[in-house]
Image 1 (cartoon, rainbow, N blue to C red):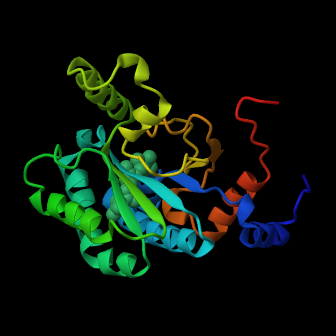
Image 2 (spheres, rainbow, N blue to C red):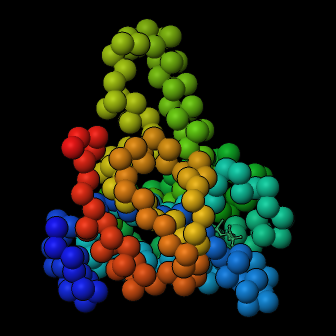
Image 3 (cartoon, protein in one colour):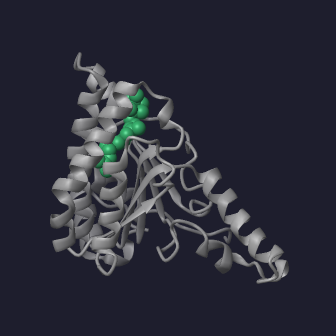
Length: 252
Ligand code: FPP
């Protein structure tokens, strides 16, 4: 495949939609370090992270990407300090309160990946805002925005297995009838295209329990850029890297 110069590459990615991933997943890492480098509390980094996120959602929509899934809060993130968890939950509520109508106008369909009702007590406003966002945008046909929240990939797979095991035990399905399609229907990403491209910022090389099933054939991109600095240009670079990949899905 041709080696593009930077500007050509941008044009190529933008003009040729066949070179774009259909489904991008992002681990938005590095907010805390971004803030600490500025002598600020970690929560300052999360605020800046929301700004970066807003821009990347907007750009994904403009590019015509079908699905974008972001890792907002893992099932393990409750271990962080009460102050940091509180700040993140505050940002979440603010985001859904302020942005919902704008996203709806853009025909964005919001999907929450994770256990909303299993979030701790005291977060009733967040839970209602999340359910309202799903309901409000459920018939939209534009960008599918997956927000992984109180999410764990292992938990997701276990729950899918439990639900299918129950149906088999109830005599509703035969165990040998459980195939890929049936299993995938039990995942939060049901109906979304396969994840083509995973971006992780801040240089960490871990999956952190994110989309363990769905990432089977995803291309991986890692950048040292911290999430609050991940802008349109950085996204272009990532998409360019994707456009140059030769995906083989186990073949040659
Ligand atoms: C990782 O950085 C980031 C998070 C755990 C939270 C990401 C959340 C947001 C950007 C905002 C919330 C989302 C919405 C939808 C409003 P880190 O804190 O682990 O950074 P570090 O590795 O530098 O410590």
